[in-house]
Length: 270
Image 1 (cartoon, one colour):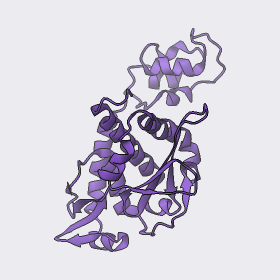
Image 2 (tube, helix red, strand yellow; image 1 turned 60 degrees about the vertical axis):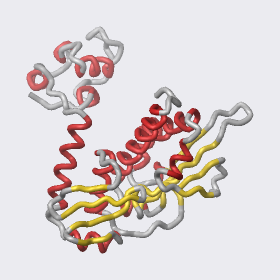
Image 3 (spheres, one colour; image 1 turned 90 degrees about the vertical axis):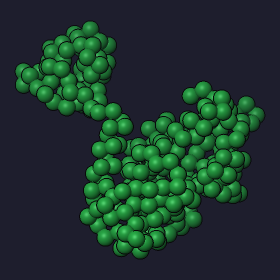
């Protein structure tokens, strides 16, 4: 039985005519219904026999997000065990001692040894582990340039920006609108640095998820009938130190982290 990750994979099998013979308004709506097991795929009269045979039974759905990340971490740990960590430390400006590479994550020590075992002064979660291990494996070690660009200006960013804006910038803006201590936490807990940016935002804070991968969070307060705005910027050397998927994953994790902090203080409803 075929493994289906999302409704779009079903939609690609359809002719896109929106004929409504399946009693759904669009082919996309039909694909979603099939994915949710509300309709059988053979309800589309235009699919070829071999497609129906391949996808006609119970669709094998993907693992949960957590399971996917667990699998990714396992694979990354295996890759880490195969490289020279001392050379990786030298490349990234990290420390190497007693068979462990140690670098800073939000200013706190994060270590991985030659067997892929992890240790950290901060809570280790998959949203941070996957990007950090990818950085250790593939980061070039290029120093930040001090030139700030948007997510869509990164390699691979344009196709992911709409999702990034929905999953990272908009939720973080909602937190900033209601949780007045957000930026204080960024400074005090996560080692952020408040700056006066040339972008003209009311608040600009630089965070260091990784020493070679700073991000700048800029917030504009509501004014004269205009709603507030929040955008995340990246150093122009970001592509050299973190791939776009790891970048997205890290920022999604950062957003979720601040959402949880705000909820804990009863400051906002997500």
